[in-house]
Length: 307
Image (cartoon, one colour):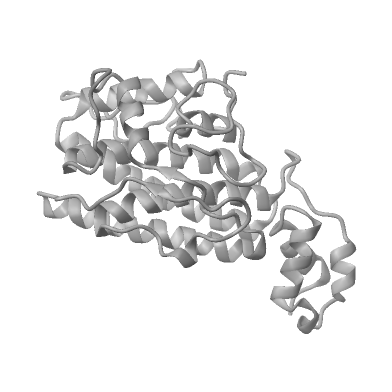
């Protein structure tokens, strides 16, 4: 069925270390596959991406992001977060602060929210399955105070005001705008670091879905003429993830910019530290903050776009 090298790669790429691989072997029942002895697979060294980071570590980093998106959208669309059976794993399992159902006024936007929520929950379920026993738990997530901090940083509100992403559909779309563009650039940045072709194919598929989501959100914001607010959020992200002015808003009343690209119509990438700068809401080196008050789980956990 599968050759020895393929099975070895699947196991070694699915885990972050030897202990994870041994647990994977036990849970997967590799000895029953009839292709190679389990002891040979456990003893083999872990394959690693060219960056020196394992595919398991990269997928777990993505899983942290998907936990955040799934919680945000599930509350907005359905009024509840992830089931507890989708939150266990390695590292500290945290709770969720904030979140409630949005009283949508536009039927189309309500439908968008429900579809995106289901997709994000499916991403969580898929990545957890792919990682097996190596999967990380949902870290503590703040989808209340973090949005106020982000809105203040973007100067959408004053220093003593609060921003509730669930208060209305406009606030919901602006909050979603923060996540979706970051998700697209995060997956694009991670894709070249993944060695296992099956995982790369899956990551590319998730990237495409996140891009569809981003397009829906950006188009909805454009239809509502929220140009200035999205520009402010875009500038705030740029101030967090480094010195390059590559992040873009949705355009203006004269010219739409629904697909943010470079001169060659290619989307830009963010490294993992840059992504963490945005979600930790700091331009500095940090291991926690913002949407993840205790940090993310897994070996990729430190921001530092600006050193």
